[in-house]
Image (cartoon, rainbow, N blue to C red; front, side, top):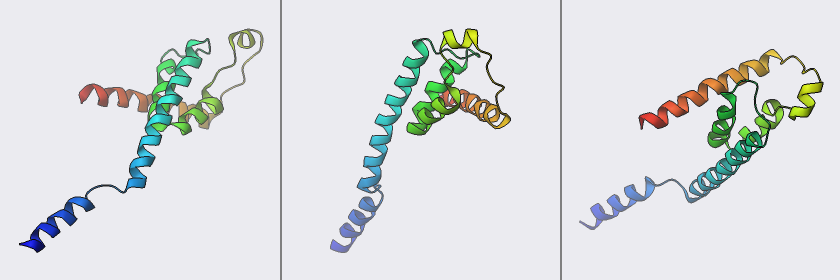
Length: 118
């Protein structure tokens, strides 16, 4: 009888993820929320995207990818300020960056669909 209780206790404890993984997940959630709020705030402050839907894609990307999404936003997604865009010709977007943006656009649509379906 005692062995059965100990076996059940052992199985229920081993089903829990390790504490470090839970801490990592909590930190990632907080960082992701901060990144999404920052990107959304940056866009709302005037850094609008050429394609309107990307104004939603970048915050959604930061929401699931956290700091990586924020880095990608600064690397390939953040447009120049409006006053610079109006007077300077913008460079042609490299093909890999176009593919990345298209993939993120698709992925953000899937995230919205998954959240709506849940």
